[in-house]
Length: 221
Image 1 (cartoon, rainbow, N blue to C red):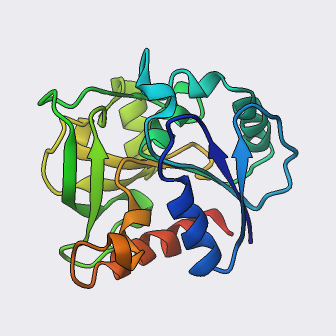
Image 2 (image 1 turned 90 degrees about the horizontal axis):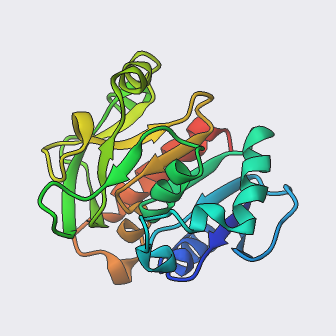
């Protein structure tokens, strides 16, 4: 598997993803500079979390206009699998690759803790009871209009929901897929539930691993 990881000023999770993909999944993983176009020769793309461009204007708004995003859009049109995590999810919505938007949490406070999650749509019944992942976001409140919500529900494209309302997200949405189910965006950080140095819950590595297993299965990687 060859993976491309988009990198932007202010992103801070790219090295975690790089290490996990190389060490846990024997992938050939590379960082892609935001200032440069790239040729589509990767099996999967990741847009990692952090605070691209300091979250100025809106989270992900400036990164969505970077040169590398033009190449990512071209790759998406060719059916490339793409995963956006946290700020990466925000970037994908700003770029028009996923529907809806992510706005300030209803509490207007940054949330940084482990949260319970449950599978939904195509991922219903795919997670054990008590499944959880860490979150760290100030703008994770997913919103969309009624038409988009109905399509997400009818097409089984809501993949993860929070077990409780942590940020005001419509239908407690934590993870969605695009129409072709080749692009996935989520606010939780599965890459933070794999490395022992970041594992703040006993036995939590299996939670991060389960997410990546389902992603690779869903996207055919």
